[in-house]
Picture 1 (cartoon, rainbow, N blue to C red):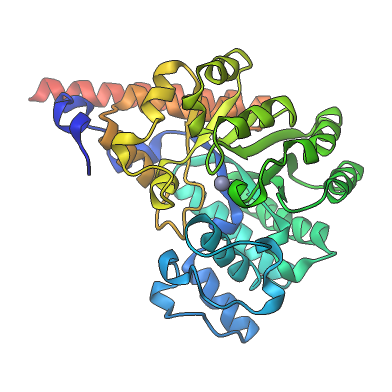
Picture 2: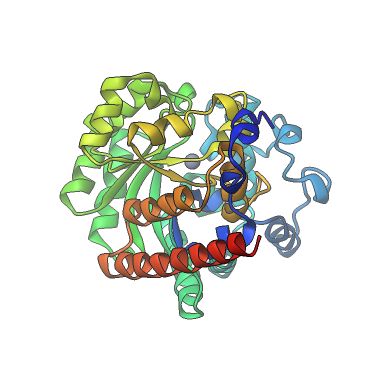
Length: 381
Ligand SMILES: [Zn+2]
């Protein structure tokens, strides 16, 4: 803990507690279904499929021990050209675990469990990113995979759990033609719950891919699909510029390195482009050294529409509610600031307008109740 803001902050702004973090109705806009498979999911999947684990069950999610593990030849679909360590090794691990999902029923069950875990953090709406190239058992059947996931999410919603929609993510090493065909097929439908086109993966390995995917993202925009783009994590501001100028991004996943370019910050603000920031992911994967150097407060102060997300909660060993508590403590943010994050998460999401309105109404009520509780606690002192 670096804690300069922690020690200098007045007592009432030392962050929110876990109950408040859970109670705030919110959306999560930067989370990967691939990073939402729990350890228990991996164990039952491996057992059901007769697969052995690459390491001890209890430490399977210790990313550092898996950065150089040997994967069978056929599991490298999402990891072409990746090296070892950091983000690349992490992506290879995701490939391995998604390879365990082999039947529509298994895909539906992991999606249902994901929605349940979102709910337990008080997440009421999620745009979940799915990159079918990681799910190597589904090559040529990617739409069947998405339909199976959507079925699990529909059941979850019916059972009163978090509403989860899907952002189909391209891999940076895919070709322009592959990307265009994917969008054409999504648009032709049926594509239940697919509300957005996305691109993720390691920008360092693939280089600039804005131009390559421009046609696909333009097609998506013209067909009414939302657009969200990973940039400004392993790329600098130039990746974010490409996302905005070439890919018509409505939201940037990460985007933290935009802080290095004042003109870009101005552009994000004037175009109302939100950032799906994930500080814990950035610190774990070494994008920043520690909380003190993370640009989240600077982005917030600049007036960018920043949201606070997990990225890959299960392998990172966290939940959204837990990350909200920790982030609020590190930066000395109390209820008002965190309620602002909740409100922006709803605005930045691709939920439909009626759900957004309902979530805002619930948020106002929750904040009013929490403020009243705070006041009575202060008066009792
Ligand atoms: Zn991500």
